[in-house]
Length: 422
Image 1 (tube, rainbow, N blue to C red):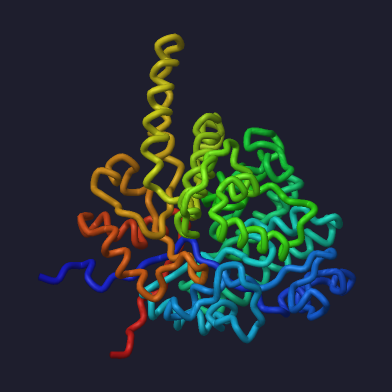
Image 2 (image 1 turned 60 degrees about the horizontal axis):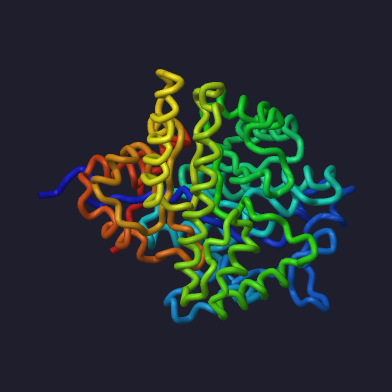
Protein backbone atom coordinates (compact mmCIF):
# COMPACT_ATOMS: atom_id res chain seq x y z
CA UNK A 1 0.00 0.00 0.00
CA UNK A 2 1.47 3.43 -0.92
CA UNK A 3 2.53 5.68 1.99
CA UNK A 4 3.13 9.40 2.43
CA UNK A 5 6.86 8.74 2.10
CA UNK A 6 6.87 6.95 -1.24
CA UNK A 7 8.87 8.67 -4.00
CA UNK A 8 10.92 10.56 -1.42
CA UNK A 9 13.73 12.95 -2.20
CA UNK A 10 16.74 13.67 -0.03
CA UNK A 11 18.52 16.84 1.08
CA UNK A 12 22.30 16.58 1.14
CA UNK A 13 23.88 18.52 3.98
CA UNK A 14 27.33 17.96 2.52
CA UNK A 15 27.91 18.43 -1.18
CA UNK A 16 30.58 20.45 -2.96
CA UNK A 17 31.23 22.59 -6.02
CA UNK A 18 34.14 23.68 -8.18
CA UNK A 19 34.35 27.47 -8.38
CA UNK A 20 34.27 28.83 -11.95
CA UNK A 21 37.49 30.54 -13.02
CA UNK A 22 35.89 34.01 -13.01
CA UNK A 23 34.57 34.12 -9.42
CA UNK A 24 37.27 36.36 -7.93
CA UNK A 25 38.18 38.10 -11.18
CA UNK A 26 34.59 39.34 -11.44
CA UNK A 27 33.87 40.12 -7.81
CA UNK A 28 37.00 41.39 -6.09
CA UNK A 29 37.42 45.16 -5.74
CA UNK A 30 39.72 46.55 -8.42
CA UNK A 31 42.62 47.11 -6.00
CA UNK A 32 42.70 43.38 -5.15
CA UNK A 33 41.89 41.88 -8.54
CA UNK A 34 45.46 41.29 -9.71
CA UNK A 35 46.40 39.66 -6.39
CA UNK A 36 43.27 37.55 -6.00
CA UNK A 37 42.86 33.90 -7.04
CA UNK A 38 43.21 33.58 -10.79
CA UNK A 39 43.39 30.74 -13.27
CA UNK A 40 46.79 30.45 -14.97
CA UNK A 41 48.61 28.06 -17.26
CA UNK A 42 52.35 28.30 -16.66
CA UNK A 43 55.30 26.03 -15.89
CA UNK A 44 53.22 24.39 -13.16
CA UNK A 45 50.49 23.53 -15.65
CA UNK A 46 46.89 24.80 -15.50
CA UNK A 47 46.01 25.77 -11.94
CA UNK A 48 44.71 28.41 -9.58
CA UNK A 49 47.35 30.88 -8.39
CA UNK A 50 47.11 32.72 -5.09
CA UNK A 51 49.97 34.24 -3.10
CA UNK A 52 52.53 32.12 -5.03
CA UNK A 53 50.57 28.92 -4.35
CA UNK A 54 49.50 26.82 -7.35
CA UNK A 55 46.31 24.83 -6.77
CA UNK A 56 45.30 22.43 -9.56
CA UNK A 57 41.82 21.12 -10.19
CA UNK A 58 41.79 17.72 -8.53
CA UNK A 59 40.07 14.51 -9.58
CA UNK A 60 39.15 13.73 -5.97
CA UNK A 61 37.09 16.91 -5.84
CA UNK A 62 35.22 16.39 -9.12
CA UNK A 63 35.60 12.75 -10.19
CA UNK A 64 32.33 11.71 -8.58
CA UNK A 65 30.43 13.55 -11.31
CA UNK A 66 31.78 11.08 -13.87
CA UNK A 67 29.71 7.96 -14.56
CA UNK A 68 30.36 5.06 -14.77
CA UNK A 69 32.97 4.86 -12.04
CA UNK A 70 35.35 3.01 -14.32
CA UNK A 71 35.80 6.21 -16.31
CA UNK A 72 36.94 8.27 -13.32
CA UNK A 73 40.61 9.31 -13.22
CA UNK A 74 42.77 8.09 -10.32
CA UNK A 75 42.44 10.04 -7.06
CA UNK A 76 44.42 13.30 -6.77
CA UNK A 77 45.00 13.46 -10.52
CA UNK A 78 45.28 17.11 -11.70
CA UNK A 79 42.63 17.93 -14.31
CA UNK A 80 41.99 20.57 -16.94
CA UNK A 81 38.66 22.37 -17.17
CA UNK A 82 37.53 20.28 -20.13
CA UNK A 83 37.89 17.16 -17.98
CA UNK A 84 35.57 18.50 -15.26
CA UNK A 85 31.84 17.85 -15.51
CA UNK A 86 29.76 21.06 -15.80
CA UNK A 87 27.69 19.73 -12.87
CA UNK A 88 30.64 20.73 -10.68
CA UNK A 89 30.62 24.42 -11.59
CA UNK A 90 27.36 25.26 -13.39
CA UNK A 91 24.15 25.38 -11.29
CA UNK A 92 21.90 24.35 -14.19
CA UNK A 93 23.98 21.25 -14.87
CA UNK A 94 24.12 20.60 -11.13
CA UNK A 95 20.32 20.62 -10.87
CA UNK A 96 20.14 18.07 -13.67
CA UNK A 97 22.59 15.85 -11.79
CA UNK A 98 20.65 16.31 -8.54
CA UNK A 99 17.37 15.38 -10.21
CA UNK A 100 18.94 12.21 -11.54
CA UNK A 101 19.94 11.36 -7.95
CA UNK A 102 16.61 12.40 -6.37
CA UNK A 103 18.49 15.09 -4.42
CA UNK A 104 16.03 17.87 -3.73
CA UNK A 105 18.46 20.34 -2.18
CA UNK A 106 22.08 20.59 -1.10
CA UNK A 107 24.60 22.58 0.87
CA UNK A 108 27.64 23.05 -1.35
CA UNK A 109 30.95 23.55 0.45
CA UNK A 110 33.69 25.50 -1.33
CA UNK A 111 36.54 23.68 -3.03
CA UNK A 112 39.58 25.71 -4.11
CA UNK A 113 39.89 27.78 -0.89
CA UNK A 114 39.11 24.79 1.37
CA UNK A 115 35.88 23.72 3.03
CA UNK A 116 36.15 26.50 5.63
CA UNK A 117 38.26 28.85 3.53
CA UNK A 118 41.62 27.61 4.86
CA UNK A 119 43.57 29.10 1.93
CA UNK A 120 42.34 32.56 2.82
CA UNK A 121 42.59 31.98 6.58
CA UNK A 122 46.38 31.59 6.32
CA UNK A 123 46.92 34.25 3.65
CA UNK A 124 49.60 36.83 4.39
CA UNK A 125 47.49 39.81 3.29
CA UNK A 126 44.44 39.76 5.57
CA UNK A 127 42.70 42.63 3.79
CA UNK A 128 42.94 40.68 0.55
CA UNK A 129 41.85 37.51 2.34
CA UNK A 130 38.72 39.16 3.74
CA UNK A 131 37.86 40.53 0.30
CA UNK A 132 38.29 37.03 -1.17
CA UNK A 133 36.02 35.51 1.49
CA UNK A 134 33.33 38.10 0.85
CA UNK A 135 33.61 37.72 -2.92
CA UNK A 136 33.15 33.96 -2.61
CA UNK A 137 30.18 34.30 -0.25
CA UNK A 138 28.47 36.81 -2.53
CA UNK A 139 29.00 34.61 -5.57
CA UNK A 140 27.66 31.50 -3.86
CA UNK A 141 24.59 33.23 -2.44
CA UNK A 142 23.78 35.62 -5.30
CA UNK A 143 24.59 33.42 -8.29
CA UNK A 144 24.70 29.77 -7.27
CA UNK A 145 21.89 29.63 -4.69
CA UNK A 146 19.72 32.30 -6.29
CA UNK A 147 19.73 30.51 -9.64
CA UNK A 148 17.39 27.84 -8.25
CA UNK A 149 15.57 28.96 -5.08
CA UNK A 150 14.80 26.12 -2.71
CA UNK A 151 17.41 23.82 -4.24
CA UNK A 152 20.60 25.10 -2.59
CA UNK A 153 21.13 25.90 1.09
CA UNK A 154 23.15 29.06 1.74
CA UNK A 155 26.51 28.56 3.43
CA UNK A 156 29.11 31.17 4.36
CA UNK A 157 32.79 31.13 5.26
CA UNK A 158 34.17 33.72 7.67
CA UNK A 159 37.59 35.19 8.63
CA UNK A 160 38.65 32.95 11.50
CA UNK A 161 41.66 35.07 12.44
CA UNK A 162 39.45 37.76 13.99
CA UNK A 163 36.42 36.79 16.06
CA UNK A 164 34.66 40.12 15.58
CA UNK A 165 35.24 40.11 11.84
CA UNK A 166 33.96 36.53 11.74
CA UNK A 167 30.79 37.59 13.54
CA UNK A 168 30.30 40.58 11.26
CA UNK A 169 30.67 38.46 8.13
CA UNK A 170 28.32 35.85 9.55
CA UNK A 171 25.70 38.55 10.19
CA UNK A 172 26.21 39.92 6.68
CA UNK A 173 25.77 36.60 4.87
CA UNK A 174 22.88 35.48 7.06
CA UNK A 175 21.09 38.67 6.01
CA UNK A 176 21.77 37.65 2.40
CA UNK A 177 20.30 34.18 2.92
CA UNK A 178 23.04 31.98 4.40
CA UNK A 179 21.63 29.23 6.60
CA UNK A 180 24.93 28.07 8.12
CA UNK A 181 28.58 29.01 8.57
CA UNK A 182 31.49 26.67 7.86
CA UNK A 183 34.29 26.75 10.45
CA UNK A 184 37.26 24.58 11.39
CA UNK A 185 36.55 21.42 13.35
CA UNK A 186 39.83 21.93 15.22
CA UNK A 187 40.81 25.61 15.06
CA UNK A 188 43.74 25.17 17.45
CA UNK A 189 45.40 22.91 14.86
CA UNK A 190 45.26 25.50 12.11
CA UNK A 191 46.68 28.46 13.98
CA UNK A 192 43.65 29.85 15.81
CA UNK A 193 42.44 29.74 19.43
CA UNK A 194 40.69 26.65 20.79
CA UNK A 195 36.89 26.58 20.76
CA UNK A 196 36.63 27.70 24.39
CA UNK A 197 38.66 30.87 23.87
CA UNK A 198 36.80 34.20 24.10
CA UNK A 199 38.02 34.87 20.56
CA UNK A 200 34.96 32.96 19.33
CA UNK A 201 32.31 34.55 21.56
CA UNK A 202 31.14 37.15 18.98
CA UNK A 203 30.61 34.43 16.34
CA UNK A 204 28.90 32.08 18.77
CA UNK A 205 26.62 34.92 19.84
CA UNK A 206 25.58 35.65 16.24
CA UNK A 207 24.85 31.98 15.51
CA UNK A 208 23.06 31.53 18.83
CA UNK A 209 20.82 34.52 18.16
CA UNK A 210 20.11 33.38 14.60
CA UNK A 211 19.45 29.80 15.69
CA UNK A 212 21.56 28.56 12.78
CA UNK A 213 24.32 25.92 12.83
CA UNK A 214 28.05 25.92 12.54
CA UNK A 215 29.19 23.24 10.07
CA UNK A 216 32.42 21.44 10.93
CA UNK A 217 33.52 19.53 7.88
CA UNK A 218 35.95 16.63 7.89
CA UNK A 219 39.42 17.93 7.03
CA UNK A 220 38.98 21.51 8.24
CA UNK A 221 41.33 20.82 11.14
CA UNK A 222 44.32 19.77 9.04
CA UNK A 223 47.45 21.69 10.08
CA UNK A 224 48.92 23.71 7.22
CA UNK A 225 52.06 22.28 5.68
CA UNK A 226 53.68 25.65 5.10
CA UNK A 227 56.43 24.28 2.90
CA UNK A 228 54.08 22.39 0.60
CA UNK A 229 52.20 23.68 -2.37
CA UNK A 230 48.87 22.03 -2.99
CA UNK A 231 50.19 20.00 -5.92
CA UNK A 232 53.00 18.61 -3.77
CA UNK A 233 50.52 17.73 -1.03
CA UNK A 234 48.35 15.83 -3.51
CA UNK A 235 51.37 13.97 -4.86
CA UNK A 236 52.38 12.88 -1.37
CA UNK A 237 48.82 11.78 -0.62
CA UNK A 238 48.82 9.70 -3.81
CA UNK A 239 52.06 8.06 -2.73
CA UNK A 240 50.78 7.40 0.78
CA UNK A 241 47.64 5.68 -0.51
CA UNK A 242 49.53 3.72 -3.15
CA UNK A 243 52.03 2.48 -0.55
CA UNK A 244 49.38 1.79 2.14
CA UNK A 245 51.30 4.20 4.36
CA UNK A 246 48.75 5.18 6.98
CA UNK A 247 51.47 6.62 9.23
CA UNK A 248 52.04 9.26 6.55
CA UNK A 249 48.33 9.94 6.18
CA UNK A 250 47.78 10.23 9.92
CA UNK A 251 50.75 12.56 10.40
CA UNK A 252 49.83 14.85 7.54
CA UNK A 253 46.19 15.04 8.66
CA UNK A 254 47.15 16.10 12.18
CA UNK A 255 45.83 13.18 14.17
CA UNK A 256 46.71 13.36 17.83
CA UNK A 257 47.83 9.73 17.98
CA UNK A 258 49.54 7.51 15.47
CA UNK A 259 46.50 5.27 15.23
CA UNK A 260 47.67 3.92 11.92
CA UNK A 261 50.91 2.60 13.39
CA UNK A 262 50.95 -0.61 11.39
CA UNK A 263 50.97 -0.96 7.63
CA UNK A 264 48.04 -2.78 6.10
CA UNK A 265 46.05 -2.78 2.93
CA UNK A 266 43.70 0.21 2.89
CA UNK A 267 41.61 1.48 0.05
CA UNK A 268 41.00 5.26 -0.19
CA UNK A 269 37.40 4.96 1.02
CA UNK A 270 38.47 2.96 4.06
CA UNK A 271 41.12 5.54 4.86
CA UNK A 272 38.50 8.28 4.68
CA UNK A 273 36.27 6.39 7.15
CA UNK A 274 39.16 6.02 9.59
CA UNK A 275 40.05 9.69 9.34
CA UNK A 276 36.42 10.80 9.71
CA UNK A 277 35.84 8.78 12.85
CA UNK A 278 39.10 9.94 14.42
CA UNK A 279 38.72 13.65 13.67
CA UNK A 280 35.02 13.61 14.45
CA UNK A 281 35.62 11.99 17.82
CA UNK A 282 38.10 14.67 18.80
CA UNK A 283 35.75 17.46 17.73
CA UNK A 284 32.75 15.97 19.49
CA UNK A 285 34.71 15.34 22.69
CA UNK A 286 36.06 18.91 22.72
CA UNK A 287 32.56 20.34 22.48
CA UNK A 288 31.00 17.96 25.02
CA UNK A 289 33.81 18.79 27.48
CA UNK A 290 33.17 22.50 27.12
CA UNK A 291 30.38 24.46 28.77
CA UNK A 292 29.63 26.46 25.64
CA UNK A 293 26.11 25.18 25.18
CA UNK A 294 25.04 26.42 28.60
CA UNK A 295 26.27 29.86 27.57
CA UNK A 296 24.77 29.61 24.07
CA UNK A 297 21.60 27.51 24.44
CA UNK A 298 20.54 27.93 20.79
CA UNK A 299 23.90 27.04 19.27
CA UNK A 300 23.96 23.93 17.08
CA UNK A 301 26.72 22.02 15.28
CA UNK A 302 26.64 19.80 12.21
CA UNK A 303 29.49 17.27 12.04
CA UNK A 304 29.75 17.30 8.26
CA UNK A 305 31.13 14.13 6.64
CA UNK A 306 32.33 12.66 9.92
CA UNK A 307 29.93 9.71 9.89
CA UNK A 308 27.66 8.61 12.74
CA UNK A 309 28.32 4.97 13.64
CA UNK A 310 31.14 5.86 16.04
CA UNK A 311 29.18 8.45 18.02
CA UNK A 312 27.42 6.13 20.56
CA UNK A 313 30.77 4.95 21.96
CA UNK A 314 31.83 8.57 22.58
CA UNK A 315 28.52 9.41 24.26
CA UNK A 316 28.60 6.25 26.38
CA UNK A 317 32.11 6.98 27.66
CA UNK A 318 31.28 10.65 28.23
CA UNK A 319 28.15 9.77 30.23
CA UNK A 320 30.01 7.18 32.31
CA UNK A 321 32.81 9.63 33.11
CA UNK A 322 30.30 12.33 34.02
CA UNK A 323 28.40 9.91 36.26
CA UNK A 324 31.61 9.12 38.16
CA UNK A 325 32.36 12.83 38.50
CA UNK A 326 28.90 13.46 39.92
CA UNK A 327 29.50 10.99 42.74
CA UNK A 328 31.99 13.53 44.08
CA UNK A 329 30.33 16.68 42.74
CA UNK A 330 26.56 16.21 42.37
CA UNK A 331 24.95 18.09 39.48
CA UNK A 332 21.60 18.20 37.74
CA UNK A 333 23.09 19.53 34.48
CA UNK A 334 22.28 17.58 31.30
CA UNK A 335 24.37 14.49 30.68
CA UNK A 336 26.71 14.61 27.65
CA UNK A 337 24.36 12.43 25.61
CA UNK A 338 21.54 14.88 26.36
CA UNK A 339 23.75 17.78 25.29
CA UNK A 340 24.44 15.97 22.04
CA UNK A 341 20.74 15.45 21.31
CA UNK A 342 20.00 19.10 22.07
CA UNK A 343 22.81 20.68 20.04
CA UNK A 344 24.71 18.36 17.68
CA UNK A 345 23.77 16.57 14.46
CA UNK A 346 25.74 13.75 12.87
CA UNK A 347 25.91 13.44 9.09
CA UNK A 348 26.57 10.29 7.05
CA UNK A 349 26.98 9.22 3.43
CA UNK A 350 26.60 5.45 3.47
CA UNK A 351 26.24 3.57 6.77
CA UNK A 352 23.75 1.06 8.18
CA UNK A 353 21.35 3.12 10.30
CA UNK A 354 19.62 0.71 12.67
CA UNK A 355 16.67 1.48 14.97
CA UNK A 356 19.07 1.00 17.89
CA UNK A 357 21.46 3.62 16.47
CA UNK A 358 18.57 6.04 15.96
CA UNK A 359 17.48 5.46 19.56
CA UNK A 360 20.99 6.15 20.86
CA UNK A 361 21.57 9.31 18.82
CA UNK A 362 18.01 10.60 18.52
CA UNK A 363 15.87 10.67 15.40
CA UNK A 364 16.38 14.44 15.19
CA UNK A 365 20.18 14.13 15.20
CA UNK A 366 21.00 12.36 11.92
CA UNK A 367 21.18 13.88 8.44
CA UNK A 368 22.17 12.50 5.03
CA UNK A 369 24.95 13.59 2.65
CA UNK A 370 25.81 12.71 -0.93
CA UNK A 371 29.28 14.37 -1.05
CA UNK A 372 28.77 15.01 -4.79
CA UNK A 373 30.99 15.50 -6.80
CA UNK A 374 33.70 14.02 -4.57
CA UNK A 375 34.76 10.45 -5.25
CA UNK A 376 33.08 9.20 -2.06
CA UNK A 377 29.65 9.96 -3.55
CA UNK A 378 27.17 7.26 -4.51
CA UNK A 379 25.80 9.43 -7.33
CA UNK A 380 23.76 8.67 -9.36
CA UNK A 381 22.58 5.91 -7.02
CA UNK A 382 22.45 7.78 -3.73
CA UNK A 383 18.79 7.03 -3.06
CA UNK A 384 19.38 3.34 -3.69
CA UNK A 385 22.19 3.35 -1.13
CA UNK A 386 20.07 5.35 1.32
CA UNK A 387 17.30 2.79 0.98
CA UNK A 388 19.80 0.10 1.97
CA UNK A 389 21.06 2.19 4.91
CA UNK A 390 17.56 2.89 6.25
CA UNK A 391 15.96 -0.49 5.51
CA UNK A 392 14.52 -0.99 9.03
CA UNK A 393 13.70 2.66 9.76
CA UNK A 394 9.97 3.58 9.91
CA UNK A 395 8.62 6.12 7.43
CA UNK A 396 8.34 9.17 9.68
CA UNK A 397 11.90 8.79 11.01
CA UNK A 398 13.19 8.03 7.53
CA UNK A 399 11.64 11.29 6.32
CA UNK A 400 13.46 13.21 9.06
CA UNK A 401 16.82 11.69 8.13
CA UNK A 402 16.27 12.22 4.40
CA UNK A 403 15.20 15.84 4.57
CA UNK A 404 13.10 16.86 7.58
CA UNK A 405 16.00 17.36 9.97
CA UNK A 406 17.89 19.43 7.40
CA UNK A 407 14.88 21.68 6.80
CA UNK A 408 14.50 22.21 10.54
CA UNK A 409 18.18 22.65 11.45
CA UNK A 410 18.91 25.08 8.60
CA UNK A 411 15.50 26.79 8.75
CA UNK A 412 15.26 25.98 5.06
CA UNK A 413 12.19 25.74 2.85
CA UNK A 414 12.87 23.33 0.02
CA UNK A 415 11.34 23.66 -3.42
CA UNK A 416 8.67 21.22 -4.49
CA UNK A 417 10.20 18.05 -5.93
CA UNK A 418 10.33 18.30 -9.72
CA UNK A 419 8.23 16.05 -11.89
CA UNK A 420 10.69 13.90 -13.79
CA UNK A 421 10.11 12.79 -17.34
CA UNK A 422 9.32 9.12 -17.76
